[in-house]
Image (cartoon, rainbow, N blue to C red; front, side, top):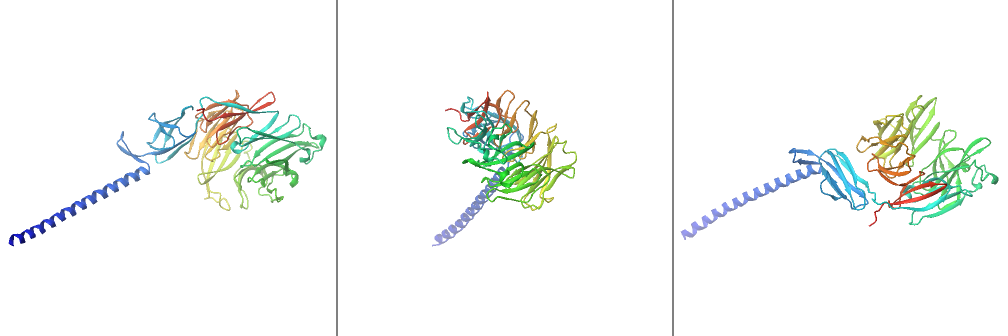
Length: 502
């Protein structure tokens, strides 16, 4: 019995010691797991915000994130000559200058050298690959067509055909085989035109532009009457070409410039010969009181923001007006600005409005918000400027609002609002035309008659096909690039396949 009693006491003491050891072991395991979890979370947090350990310098550094994409997709990307990976990816890369290569069988390699900045996201999602073997088709020939304009997205083309009886020519490019429609121009459309005058050489027709949904386009006819030069502005619905609306006749006004407000063909802003800008409703046949006066020319952004050049009290000025404002805001005024070639535009990028002012050889930029009822001092602020180095002839903005292009006949530079950098100057000597193909690519017609495509900074340049000018478009879900070639009065519509043959 005594032995049994001491045995029970000993067993109880052993059990308490064992439990204590197990408890200590569990606490240690919990502590290690917690520490590991916190370490992992800290590592992941640092990784997410771009920090990594550099094996060469043995230091922790903040890296940059690069995101890739290509058109067509399914290409492979290489960084600094390393192995290739699919372009639908992103990479954390050490800061500094790196070289990138994107490859896809059947296409020319895409290459770019770029500085990656710490803590920043760099988007290389605009690589447009060009087939090595270019397939170019002649899909339509039209005799003696002038003033050709593609619609946005390259869905349609319209121009003025002067061979025989003058007509409005519309080409539908939404199908594989283009469909052409011709509508004879009628003297009944005009304000001051009698039938014997219908074929007079005094009547100069031109296509001015399309609305953004490619439903309507505007045509101007300039002609002489009683030794005066007049303009008639005709609004066409592409689905009903025989019934254009003569805006000049409808409102009994002389007009210098017309801009679409929306895509229903109803709302327009017009600059009258007297220098007033008015808002028109075609359906309601109503015209607003002047929103701005003393205007030379203007540009419209969206449906409610106007930038303009004007002259008042002997001063040349540039300003901005937004629907709802009681009056425009003058951004620049100078008695000498007429010599300095002033130009002003408004755009939008990354949640902010941009005011772009060109004076002489310099482009100045303001960023902020134009939402307020008036342009207050804190709403939009002057940021920076860049120069071409000689008088700038033209300023344009990419469709996404990210790039500002400043050019003359010799070349151009672009400013990148994302990276706050100015490109090198890109040579354009002898080029006849230049324009934006998409948000990242510029087209131009070279002196020797080639359609050339390059990126906003001049990189990845390609001669695409023979072309004469007029206009260029990327169309049909970006499968084709359209261009025009003129020879002996015959205009040839050409199409380059942007997908390599399998």
